[in-house]
Image (cartoon, rainbow, N blue to C red; front, top):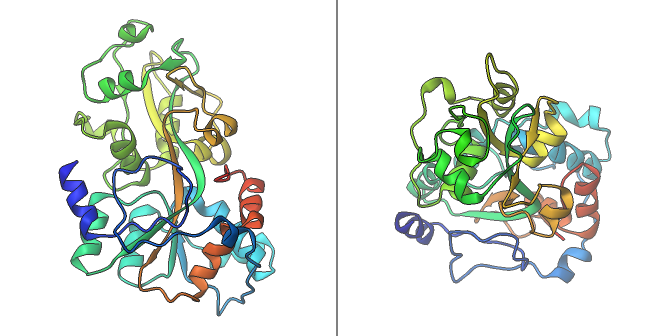
Length: 310
């Protein structure tokens, strides 16, 4: 944690909202700017064409939002904008932004390695919450366990709890899947769940490259429903549904749009718009973010299936 605070002292997280969306481990620098609520609500939709729209990249889980946003601001259909909205996944998107190969990315929060890369290239990132989200945990539908505490989850992934019987389930070893380092959900897992607790190093077959692959791995079993996995709420529910998995309650609270919005669900997070701090004040990238944070922009996000900030 001390290393992360030191790193965040080098790289400014400028959070352009006054909402207390989530508790971040990093602190913004003294020259951070805030977007006032009235600025958001009064924003008019900017207009673009394909030549003036900012270069966009991002995570897999933000593709529907990115496409819907581009369609609205370009005055085109979703089918028309899809060939022009290409997301390369979380880590490549950060690399592209830092190396100035793109202007705006829609992503989960940056990893330590991504922040290190930005620092090495003298780049400061502005990380702006745009919609609310939740980090969720899933098990097979045949597993009778439907709820875990936050501390039980941490203990499972630290290797301290190894059998489902220790958390009220069957006498089965827990197969706890993880994602690769620098994937969006692995960064979320380390920051939101493990924090200062060191996760166990799983066997290579329990590290799943894609979010969809992890969900499918939890859904499929040969002899027993022994798997545990994690992802983001929107991806599980709206992008990659699988009727053989179910979301688990955490501390007795089931993840839903209502409990995510109210912050009742305990593992809340966000998706972010990220730009370089040297982005001009009136640039297309900043105009897109400003409109997305407006009332109309948040309505668009809700219509696309995401949970608005307010």
